[in-house]
Image 1 (cartoon, helix red, strand yellow):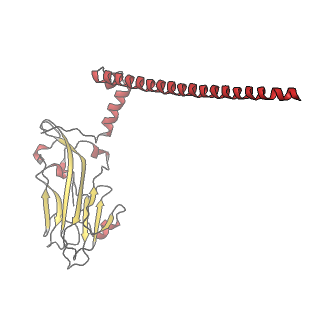
Image 2 (cartoon, one colour):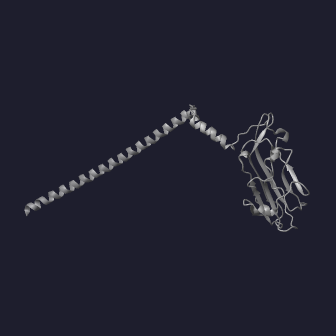
Image 3 (cartoon, rainbow, N blue to C red):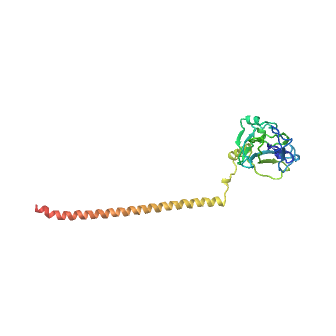
Length: 266
């Protein structure tokens, strides 16, 4: 199971897996055979809070994936994956309960990655949060073997990207996960009389304009040359026609000279 929100701090478990000694019939975050793992976040729970100098955070993206890593002889069974549609706690859920969820998916056991991705469900999940204790494991992958005696070896990865704000933030990186803020900035840029990048004079813009003009003149000159060549060809054809007509006229004159004595003899 995976908890993207709880992964914002490094002193709290956010990933739970089972080893070969796990025998319970439901998911669990503690007990025999449960392996709990913390994230490698730069922040601890003491760094999170609603007041300065503490930080607030939100999940930008997250997911958990798994693939078979055992022998081909033992490969079998199914992978059952679920991202709960209401982000409800999946601790204590049975396989039948997970399969009954409309958004649950079932895949054959294979060596390709099977991935469950996080997506925000509620408006509050788009806002910055200051209480990491509200997090629950809502993303779960359950693997069922072909038989209870068949051991299955898997490798899995959990990843999450958080956006933090506050006085003690260790670094700043741009985020594109704020559609409301982006819409506000975009509206302001389109409606207010501000100087936009395409209105700023620069040598590159001038160079680009000159290049466009030069290309236009070059294309025009090429077109004129083509027209002149076609015209010269047409004149040549006309001269050939005139020459042929002159020769035809000469032939007709010769015929008339020959016929004239014959006509007179008649």
